[in-house]
Amino acid sequence: MIDRNSTWYKIDFIARRVTPFLLTIVLVIIAQAPLKVPGVTPVTLSVGLISVYYWALHRPSMLPVAAVFCTGLLQDILAFTPLGIGSLSLVIVYGVMVSQRRLFHGKSFVFVWWGFAMTALAVGIMRWLLVSMIEGNTVLFMPSIIEFVLTVTLYPAFGYFFVLVHRSLLPDH
Image 1 (cartoon, rainbow, N blue to C red):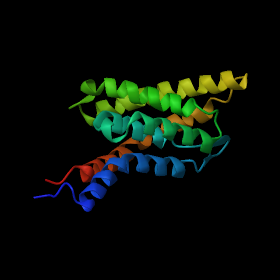
Image 2 (cartoon, rainbow, N blue to C red; image 1 turned 45 degrees about the vertical axis):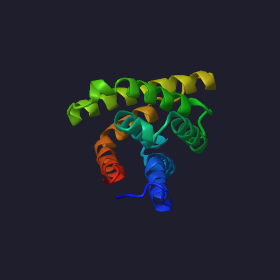
Image 3 (cartoon, one colour; image 1 turned 120 degrees about the vertical axis):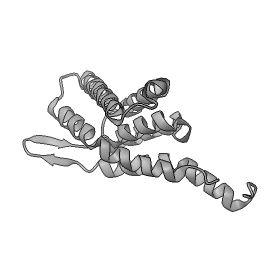
């Protein structure tokens, strides 16, 4: 029998609850290393989007909206984008995916991946439009396209990694 009042139980419980947030933060920091694509300005991979999408669909209680907002702010700071764009886009994705969990529950991986691709496309266009409006002129679109393609292409690898983490976070009974 597990003593739920023990210190180790409480530490284990807290560690399991904060793992998705801390993992997302670490991945966002690592992903800010720009990828050099010949002939194009450096681009980054949007792992924050992948993580928010995954956890919003599978365990939104483990990545609350306040954590999503903070992740977006950190992403904006590290990427030197206008503050709030990352938070706005990630919070919107979180809200939409939490509300659409039933649509994706029990569906094939390809269907979930397609949903991610559509989400990443919408977020990429929204971010590009917002940055263009804030800058007062049209910013280059090619980095957004490359970021979209890289992010969607690497979703299965990150998705598999998140499944492994998710399984390890399930409580032992």
